[in-house]
Image (cartoon, rainbow, N blue to C red):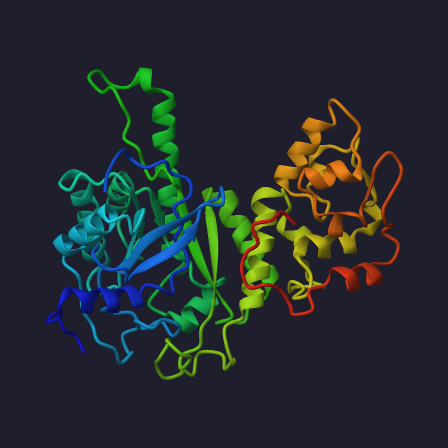
Length: 427
């Protein structure tokens, strides 16, 4: 049922609730566009983490929850029995400014159901961002969702007003996309990602060659300074973790994505989800949160620890271990490479040691220039010795030995499967 006869509070509650299942929002990677100000009540605010560990608040809403597409996993699909409504551009601009002024939010995440031709929907999102920048004087963070099928010119315009863009790939293979979201095309989604990447590269090239710009042109506009991201739904289709991690690795390489977000599939009928189960979807008791968590850890290895997808998983073991973080699981499969002498090995080798992260590896390199490290000094540098002790030596001495993978696994396994939040510590 479509109804625009709602007060603003009802719209916020409905369109914020409809947006909460999109995980691909974070405000990392941008320093903002100057000074500025974003609503009078806290509905629609989500918390996200920047890459440096800060918690930020975003106003996360849909422009409209009316949609022509009938994606099986989506609460806003065309066949869903739900109230439909839309904001106006002016309403969204005012809400964002009010929220920001009251210090409720630090940015805006804006997506939409596909209620008309994709270009028309995208125009509304761009108009909102443009009006925030040019008329309201808003200088804060804006993340715009690219609507599948949007033309190249509109993608370019969107990046001139937004800090981050994202086109959700949704499912790991085109086969699953056709089965669960037949009106979407993997080729179209990847084409949008490619357009963002190529435009970003061109703007960067122009900035480097600014002295060669045409006469009278003295600067290059900023295009999506926080880059682009995407989202994969985990558990709605049959692909294994190896396929997912391989896809993520390819997306990082080809399109220079800042983040791939993994969203555990939430079956219809669960509290807060609503709806009648779709026969195209798997019958599972709840979202695969442990699997989502392990995928985030594996993704961390891709982005910060210089692992290749095929090192993390292969055909003989296509799923991540639910009881071990993927770095420890890799180390136990490769015990022949350990122990490593911490006072001599290089940075890349340090990154392979469970319990040593990127920050602690850099600290180790810095400190050992002036003195020999001890186990106590490693602990002070942030090394998690509970994990690392099985895989390292210091001047030939060790706290334990990598002799029996079953014994080490018993001590390092998570008996409950895993914590359900991406850890801030280094693993």
